[in-house]
Image (cartoon, rainbow, N blue to C red; front, side):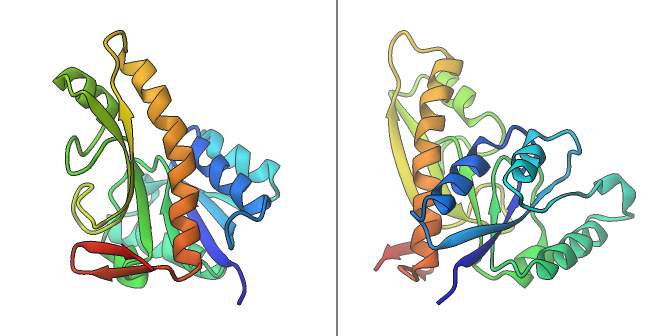
Length: 202
């Protein structure tokens, strides 16, 4: 069986993209990044992909009359590169019905908090502001809600008394770089079973 072909969507720095590319290059996961897409032409994620010899594409949502039109263009791009699993890595837009219908249970995301707590933007800051004693990160399947899809893997990070939101975010990011490739590896090996909201490891 060949490697699972990934389409990574990123809007910014792309450190999770880098962790996925590194895991793939090292043979730690049976997957390869086939294409990287960004809604932001200045995203460093695009530069990371180009340096690795991976096709990197920018689509400006403002050039389309609707979200569906933009997603249809994105879907065409993903299909042209034979993408099988769509990975959101700091992608700052909600994925809609066009992509979700085309990739049923094959769109995943990483979020810097222990869902269902602190969904949406700035999960690390939300957790620190709230005063939790533990935070972390979550890899989950994507549905039409905001960070509401079934949970694949979570990693727990303690919150220390002298933490700032930034220091907490940095430690959470270290765990993101571990569990995102791990989740992709499980999918690539067919070792996940989805039953309703519950995800079981085989």
